[in-house]
Image (cartoon, rainbow, N blue to C red; front, side, top):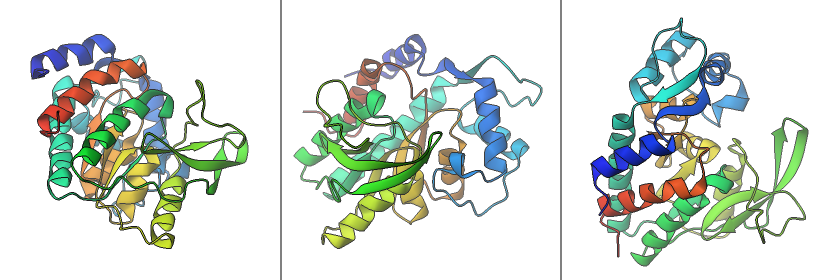
Length: 271
């Protein structure tokens, strides 16, 4: 088993927590845009409360451990590893509960190049416990607004984890899918659940729009989020998101493997 101390050391050494690559400028820009209800950072969430920049900064200081000083405007951002560990424990508890009742589960990521392996290992473990890992609406077209304008993407699955690809890319070799913050893929997947007569997921696991989009529709959702993704933490504060784990979501894919072992051990899903 990976001990809490060993994982804490890994979080700091890999830049998953402690001083992270996300800049203070990026985080503050996201808080400013969220306060203005810019859909690029809402991730499908429609908050019930009014969130100003100051409110968001205080929330993120509480949830992630970033500096709560509004005069701190530049440099790298910081995540408190103790907050990451606590959230990972809550994340693992939700997975264990889902496994215990053999719940249907949907996994999806907007960070397939980094986080696919993490989610795929969890999907394998839940499947081995008898959970139905849902893969609805495979091949469905999803029109997503990007910085290059409206682009059509294809909903696909890799190792039980939903992602979107650009048309014409098979998913073979090094290409694993597109980076996206959009909630539209999870909405398409849930429409596919209904259309295909699948059971609705009792838990959605992922990041970005997968978590916020599902949580906004009343489905239990848990996921990972960086300091420039305030939507997941707002969703957690308001009750639409069950668990938001603060960590850097853009480090090398292999750096997430110890998190996989830790979560599976805590959820009693290791074999």
